[in-house]
Image 1 (tube, one colour):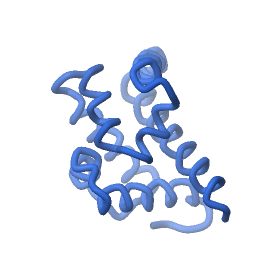
Image 2: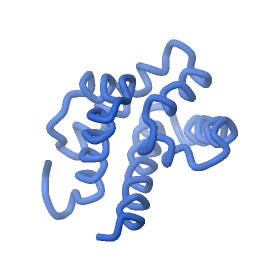
Image 3: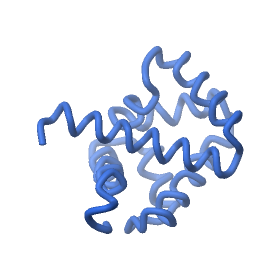
Length: 123
């Protein structure tokens, strides 16, 4: 798969799980408000930021949620683990996002690729 297509696939997977998790827990209007503020802060698709620089994405969530940003990421992590049967805990997911180093970024991208490929395999 060409790199550009893979990046698009990962951004779409990030958007899908973020929307599903926040809508299921907080409702659609809350999801819309969060995404609006993140787009305004980043000046681009927040899910591109998530896949390219998860630590920066987390900082953006902190601006919207304050200290509850970590809980929001944990909520998303728990949703991913439960719905997509990813071999990761919610706590590990939070640590990956908060740390945001190259190893963490690579693992997050693997998780998102598994979400995107959910019909073909379980990860």
